[in-house]
Length: 142
Image (cartoon, rainbow, N blue to C red; front, side, top):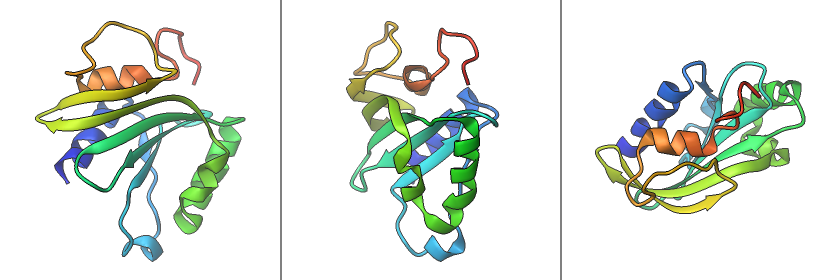
């Protein structure tokens, strides 16, 4: 799906040290609606991208965990257990949006996001990443 590839690319561009967590082959036959990304190594934050499975509606969350060690342990367990391992993460920020094509996004819901000026009806991938970046404007908190 074009939108998923676009969003993966935007995450990788904004967070160059990020890695997408992958499920084992055991889950290959199931549709994936949830995608998880470690922003950087040794961080207590994780990105969670949810595709609603119908059209181009998505939610991107920054999840906060007790420590980087907890994130590392959960990430190691993810390939075999699946996404339920991340249920202990607390949402730090959330943006729901629609992918309009050609790198155009329209924000529909913003919760605890970073504050800066932009047109939520015509967002870029960079705007989206800045909204959920746990370290935006605060230095290196990761």
